[in-house]
Image (cartoon, rainbow, N blue to C red; front, side, top):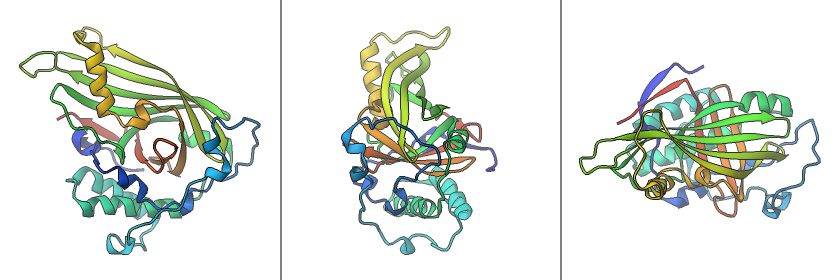
Length: 275
């Protein structure tokens, strides 16, 4: 269990402008693992079939960045310590890449659907994404981005929730606040792969909050600020490549976001401090 910590929202929702960074992670440990239970659910799209399993990609020299003799727990601790301190330079990014590769290589996938659901269910706070390409906008502040998983056998619901503050004036003060919920359903079709379908988007101003005068413009800013695979989860699947009580790493596969990594931490272990 990792001690409770307080980090800034900007440090946690790190912007990585290079899409090619998503392809730099190695994938040897990403082959679908077979659970002991069986399912007759068909695949949602052809590209998610066995022939489209994760492709091998070039990798950087991990030894030049981190100590590859680290245990999984040591690599996990180093990754959690690094992310809030990142300033965006190449060496830091390569270190994150290397820690993730090391964790994925050492990970032993959960072998039953019941244990997978037990470990995966709950609320997960986004720490890092290789697919945050938008630039900050002074009119919008994201205070938190959480993924909630409610598992039910080989399916369930997944909700991505962003807590936002919005400035609807020339002074730059935030005069409205609320949540933006991206509600989805999913099915597990092979191993631990989740095929996700978008159900709807919900914009909910908080009680007593003002309502943005231009809601479409405000939603457009949310679209730029939230990782694309979380804003529009259609046409891709998500592999769980590392999972323990606190940390979860997901790898996206599909036509839109192949190779993207999202790193989550169990909600309640970290406190987001808006900046």
